[in-house]
Length: 148
Figure (cartoon, rainbow, N blue to C red):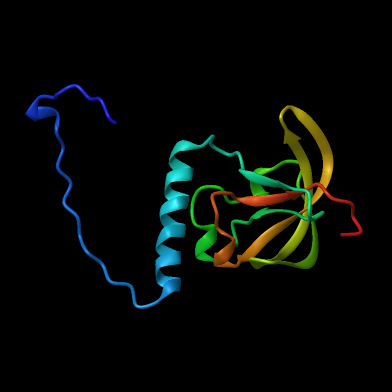
């Protein structure tokens, strides 16, 4: 049951809809990824990344400004030139998960999580993110042992 007070006609907004046909599943995924990134970049804290705390991996990565995937669209792209403490390591990585994979290079920088600061944290700068990986977050912060 929904209880709502009547509104004046001038407060009603009409939005015209357009029907689009998608030729394949990836096109729809790409459109949804772009829309998700637009909404997140508009309403989330500027400069902050939304990462998943993953107890099943020890990987830590965020999307790089050099990312070529549609999944990386939006404002949350790490730009090393804007950090005074970033150091390029340059080692390649290829993380494989059950729902996709992420590729890129490594670097280190100071990391802040809920006010706790870790100096010189090594992490991945993702340049290629599988579209199946886009589910409302920017990257992954693995909490498991290094052996994983």
